Image (cartoon, rainbow, N blue to C red; front, side, top):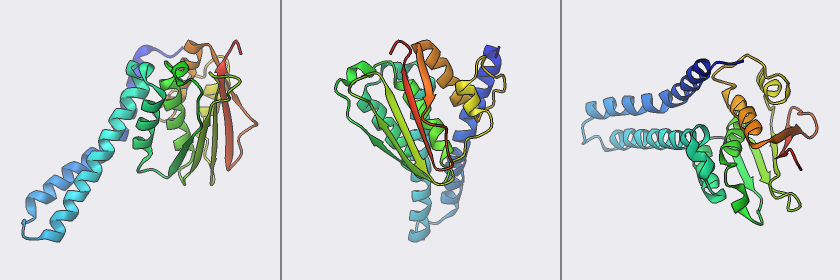
Length: 212
């Protein structure tokens, strides 16, 4: 059983790890800006662009983590989920395609589960790819995630965390999104299944209420 303290430590470590790079770039950019005469227009604009890009990245990550890791994610609409995910993935190599949902109000409360799934699957595709998220009309609370990419990577322990009983005790900052997915599945009384087993360039996932 993972203690709340250990879980909090790993989550904090993950947040710091993901935010330190863009924040460090902002600091570096400001230092360079202070040393660059305004008369050097080209260099001045390049540094400003660096600061702007890093600020946008840090803001997108902070907004995404606030929704994915915090309770605010439980009240998101489907459109809000799409917007947060699109902004977060803007500077990554993953494209995301959304299917239509007949009654998206049914997805209220499922935002954190969807966002953490996106976070995990994005890290499975470091070379880029396409993630399709759809909602079968016959089962309005079923979520299908289909990731296609080149040389997908399933980091050690992640699939075991999502599938094994009892829950493995190897929590790290890298696999903490999978722990959150597992906890959220239990909270929603939902199931997670791979269709079929993942390959090097494709994985299909189905999330549905256990009663379905």
